[in-house]
Image (cartoon, rainbow, N blue to C red; front, side, top):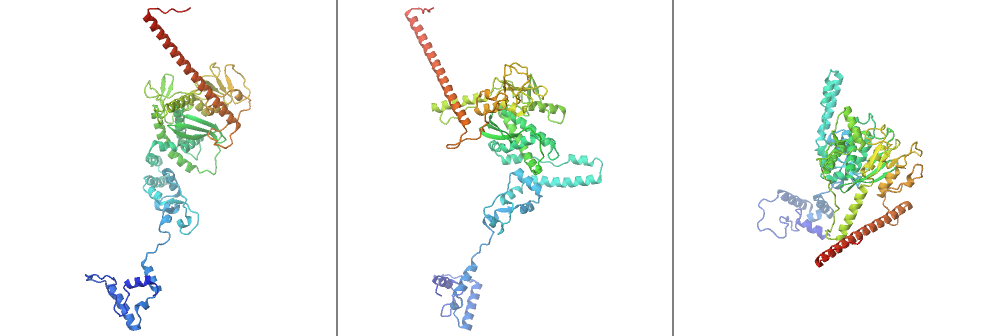
Amino acid sequence: MENPILEKKFQKSQFYIDPQGKPNSNPNPNPNPNPNPNPNPGHSQMTKTSKIVQEHHGWNAFDFLSVRHVGQLIASKMQRDRKYEKGEATQFITRRKAIQKLQLSLPDFRRLCILKGVYPQEPKKKKAVGHGSRAIHTYYHVKDIAFLSHEPIIKKFREFKHYMRRLKRVKEKRVKGATKRMRYCRPTYKLDHVVRERYPTFADALCDLDDCLSLLFLFATFPKMQRVNVHRIRLCRRLTVEFMHYIIASKSLRKVFISIKGIYFQADIQGTKVNWVIPHAVAHNYATDVDYKIMETFVEFYTTLMGFTNYRFYNSINLYYPPQLNIGNTTKQPVIDDSEESDIYEEQLAAMTQQLKKHGDNVDEEIDEFPVVNPENPDEVEMAKMEYKNLLRFQNLFKGLKFFLNREIPREYMVFIIRSFDGEVSWSNTGSLGHSYQEDDETISHQIVDRPNQDKKYLSRYYIQPQWVFDCVNAQKLVPVEDYFPGELLPPHLSPFVVEEEGEYIPPEKLAQLSEGQEGEEEGEEEEEEEEEMAVAGTEASESEAEDKISDKENGNSPVKKK
């Protein structure tokens, strides 16, 4: 044997026989003074076999076991790693196997994944995960499927299947009154524990409100249709109106933008930016390539989430929930049922022209203060005060202005924007409930129209197009009304959500707005400095007059007023 390493390993093995013909009973070079009294029987059997080979064939066991045989012997004792039994291949599972493991149908599995927030994953090594196959499959994490297997909603799904089989048998037997009794025993479930599980803190729920609000506002615009439950549409409508009332009461609206898809809004809710879109009020077209069942499953979860958040929103600003309207000196209690009073209450609440009742009679509003990193630094304190003043000025942008909406103006989102900035708004009494004054009111400052010609005009008000309201909000000031008169070519409606960086193209209209804003800020700072100087001069003059009076009294002279 030419390889010294293999030779050394072979000498330590139980197959070695020295040249004198004696078996290697103790292959250890350092013999143990106390040998084991019970030797391994396999060891003696192997040495016996090697001795027989030497006696009959005249070979030495060293020659009998070649280098190849020793290598095979060593390799057989090593554990061999099999393919696809560790690593990424064991971390994913196909959708078919997951359904078999959970014993659910495909629609129930999709519904459960949507409610629990479990989504398909894309493995990096598709060939290893597919056990050598590159076929297209939908994969899930094994831990996610194990997490779903402990969900109590699965039991409710199985109970509902059993209920449907029983209901089918009752219908086939045509038992009188049995079908009605069965419908009252329909199994139901709640998603409260799922909401608390997915959103441990309220800040987590705020970060996920964008898709929730957009989908709820979409379902709130649906008409009565067979594909979607009517009660779910009414629930979406009620929750969205309650949310808009909170935005109005807290004055949290920051940006608005009109696009082809709808009207985009941004609100600052407790320090979190929340964006959503409201579709245009147009006739609904039934989309044939949309699975309404999957969308309704999302809405089922989002309605539960929105109920929790609305309750938290209303309590944070000391409002009653469900909301109560202050109509005159009376309080309108909420009515939630299928009666006519409930429809009237919902229509009055959706008008958004009345204030909501708060807890207690005289409740002072809490003033939010901007946090200062270093309160001892006067520059930071002064900057925080300036930001707070600008925010108060922006929140009361339409304060003291009265608007009137013509019939052709979309009413809901215009009322929402104007009321969010402390303005008053009304419309014709033939439109719907909730109007507060008529068109002939002389105190109206702006009338929003979308037609070039008007039958009757009042000289005490401005007639403007709806874009003026949006541009005022985005500019955070009242822009001139001359460019928004009926029949005028409107200026470009720029998106406030686009923030240009250095080196990027900036439209000339936006550059003009930025320059005007800087000039306005400089003028405002100059006016404030002049007011401060006047105040300081007045205090110095009053102090000097007081000192003169004191000195005259001490000298015995009475002050004489000059005519």
